[in-house]
Every structure is written in structure tokens, then in C-alpha cells.
Length: 146
Image 1 (spheres, helix red, strand yellow):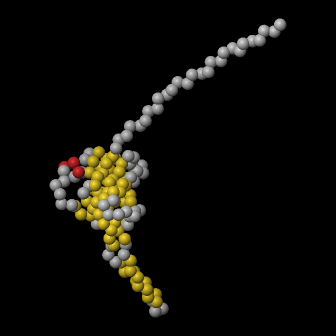
Image 2 (cartoon, rainbow, N blue to C red):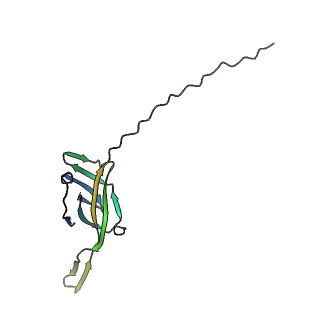
């Protein structure tokens, strides 16, 4: 994971704001106005992406911990570019058998910039109980017998 702070005049409210989220099978520590390299996403450059699998959010003195995820929390990301990681060499050899195998691998990555981290407090819907009236049974009219 590569991260770097974008040179800007960051406000004091974002200095203590961070979130730990799960994406691409890994957990990342996200902060606003920083970029991160995650596994390749099926999105174009300048696209907006929302992550809702948030494990923890810290904002100054408030910590929200999910079980397993924080409800009504999201991270807004913007795709900056697609790139490939540096090459990794894999070399396999069986001694005394003259068997050698050399392979390389380059991981496909997407560079994203964190735009915002937010949690919305939604009030639970209150269900108003409607009174159910019982059907009043009227006495049946008796047929007079002669």
C-alpha cells in the first residue's frame, strides 16, 4: 500500500478523522485527501466509488466501532489512475534434476483519492400502532315461528 499526503491547507477538523475499511480482501486505514493503491477496480478514471464496509471511524474524541461493520457509514473515493505494480520474480528449482522455472508477476492496481468519510445518524422509524376495532356482532334477527 502506498499513501502520500496531498500538499494543501487541510482544516483542523480533518486532522483527527480516519476510518478503517475493508476492500479488495484487505483492510486499509483511510484518511481524507490521501491516495491509496488498491487491487484493480472495474471503473474509469474520475469515477466516484463508495465503500460501505467500514470497520471503525474515529472523529476527534468519538470512536464508532462496527460489529462487524459500522451502520450508515461510507467513504467516497475518486479513481485517479490505473497502473501496474513493480515486477516480482518467482524462481523455482529442483536440485539435481536440471529443472528450473523463472516467472514474473505484475499486480494490476487502481490509485484512488479519498474525498470524504461520513457517518449519518438515521432515526429509527417509529411505527404508530393503529387500533384494530373488533367487529361488533349484532344479534341475529330471529325468525318468528307461527
